[in-house]
Image (cartoon, rainbow, N blue to C red; front, side, top):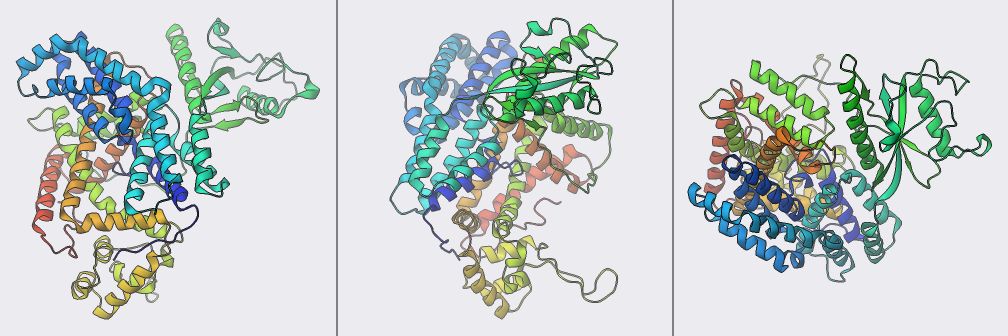
Length: 636
């Protein structure tokens, strides 16, 4: 049963902050994360790139043109920046794109149309892109829409909550497309909310924050195995000379050295191998050279990537000149935002995992190669290369059938992503219910209903095993989640408890949800509504599949472009590279459970998706019954 969350003065602002944090969370599934949301500027850029590829290789690249135009069509249609999307330049491009799309089924006619209209399409797409870029019009429109929702004096209805949630996802995708770090953006928004006392004040500061231009940073990078590179000062770097006083700017007096310069000195001494030496000017024993680059960026992480990109370009040239040696750039850098008192070190945002395990998957040459490329994708820093390796990893899993590996994974992987999203509905609901105060805060009757079947004795035979509240049965949780409070016998049967316990669980369940944050309550109710409504559930499955299909199309195109002429910038294709890793995650979560050849398993999983969709359709009006088995949906 649905409940109304607790309200407060900053309800809208807190709701926005949590929505943005969820969309920016790197652990979120593809269906929740902003990484798979293709924004209009990116879609228009990809259309131009596909048309340019068609100009160079008409017979080969024309297959990429219509999918790119179709993605742009969908992206414009679902954008929250409605007024911008109605601009005549964008409408003109969409009309031309539509003329190409309707000819898709006739290769000869389509090819002739594209050859005749390629220039017109490219120019129309460029004009449409300029509309979005002019004065950052697209991002400004999203910002104004969000600020308007915050300032609204109307009741914060379910419809407005849906708009904020959807707008948050597009907003995060938009800032990520600029190269900004989504997690740091979400943290900044949270700081604004915590600092302000009213929703109006949040809206004002939010507008100001979104209007801020990139800031000036300096980044110190470390090049290993060399102490000096001739000609380095003619590049965009400044080399720190160990014989001089170390500083971010011009050398300063030792008695007046700012903290930021002292931070840099400690960083240099450590990497030079001189941190135990009192002589800071000694040249002997140096193990590396340290270069400083200026960068314009919105956050330190983006500045780090810009500096590492440039440094790796320099090292590529050094390695090409000294082919018998090997040089590299360390991932850890020191970043200073000009004007700040201190500097700080930045490394990849990898979190420590104390205990790890190995994936249990059938071994074969193609699977082993896939795992190697998947590992390369996870460890790669450059966005386009990350997408490239992820696609190759999927491609190796597609070997072993009559279909080409590229086509097999492109056709079947979106169904895998959609099936995983079904189970993620349950996982997400559990996280929303327990993230604020832990699983132990759930009412005892609720824990009795959703608990897994436990052994009566502990592993060591020392009495009854104490139940871990974090262990729950997905099907039982969903049965409680979609319960209407009227069919208690069915709920009791599905969860293996008495009708009395089921009734108490429903009653305490409703009471418990009233203490959730507005965002958590909204999302739990949204998941409940999706699971209870067959039309909405099928629509959810199809939307996730389409998003995943678009992601796969884009990955395939970037893979082909990277093999020919794409750059290797770390923030290029940043959202797509994150989406690519999430695709790999879903595939490796599912395929090993089916055993045998991954290629055959992918085909079987896509059939399972169709079976589940048919089962949802046959459920009819029995909304209190589970439409699928959350535990077995990913298993043969």
